[in-house]
Structures are given as structure tokens and as C-alpha cells.
Length: 269
Image (cartoon, rainbow, N blue to C red):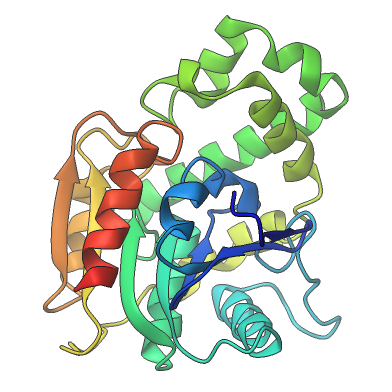
């Protein structure tokens, strides 16, 4: 990380240059971007946020029900607080969906998405996905007290991470342990899973001044492209699609250099 980095549970900021904002997926924190940070901070002022309602992130207002729209409002408020009007936006999974909605509000210089959520071919497959996510978060809550010892066991790491990354051995045990613990404090997850199917991404009109690149793993085990990526691309006219081998749904540990390269190609343009 750069020498001028500022880090806390709410966000990480470092580097210099035009602003680049990184958004993580459901249940995570900004730390999921750690392997990529030094590579992009050489070119940009990088702000990696923890989403509202997640561990260390800002709470949602008491009167606001958890929804994607509420998270977008919360992230927009964080950008305002940090003095960021428009930025290059990068998101993974749920974070990608939020990036698209921020772009709709005119907050994006460019958008790069890794396995973004927000669209689906069938409600049956979406319900199965949501059910699997509920099981995963339930399991993490059960393991939270033994997170360090559990994460040191290679077979357990492989079991827990097989659907998220291409190579579970690339994820350090301490980072898996941190992910297990912080998922327990992501209070927004359970209510969000109950409402997330009500309002998929609507068509985002093409804006030549704001290029969009969608990067999708060839073997994404959480959001397979045929069922979740193809319908999303139908709603993003003019967006560029890149399919990659050797990465999973959360690619930052699998290939940080490739992830950074995809981002910097777009921001440089």
C-alpha cells in the first residue's frame, strides 16, 4: 500500500491521481481488494469502501429498509462525504450492481465490473442461488468463533472457497478467517436476500463518455454467465464483455495482476 494510505473498517484510501472507487460483494468488506490495491494505487487515488450494513461500514438509517437502492444511496452519501463527485467505479458481484446504479446517477467516469449481480434468466435459478447464499452465511456464523483454526485447514478452505475463487490455495488463511468473522456483522445480508429479487437492473442507456467493461469468469460457479451474465449484458447496450479463464467469481486473489490490468486499461482510455 502507498505511504499516504488511510485505512479503517469503513474504507481504505491511498495512491494519487483521478479517483477510483472499489466496491465488494455481499457480506464482504473493502479488504477483499487488498491484493489489487498496490497495483492500482500507482495510477489513481483509490478508495475501497465497505458497503452500508456490512462489518465496519456505515449503518443504514433506522427508517430505511435494506435494499439495493438503499445501499446505492449509502455509497453515494459516502462519496459525497469524501468529496468525490465522479470516479472510475469498479465492483464485484453486488458491488458491480451498485456501480451500475451509481453510473445511472451520473457518478461514473468509467465502470469495470467483475461478475456483477443484478439480472437473471429465471426466478427459479435465482431462488436456488439465494438459498445457497443463506446456507453459506449460516455456516460462516457457526464457524465464526473458530475462524482462525478452521481457516488453517486446507481441506476446509477448499470447501468454503470452492465456489468463490478458482484456486482456494491462493487465499491466505488469515484472510479467510477475517471474512468468516466479518460476515457475522453484515447485518444487512439476511433482509437484503429477502428483497433482492424484486427490482433487477433496468436498461442503462449507452453513454460513450462512460465506458463499461464487464469481466466474467469462464467458470463462475456462483453466477454462471449463461444464466446471469447474458441477461445483464442485454441491459447494458454498448458495454464491452471480457471472458477470462483461471479466475473465479471473486477474482482478486486468483489473479490480482489481471484484475488490475482490466481496470487500468479502461481508466487509461
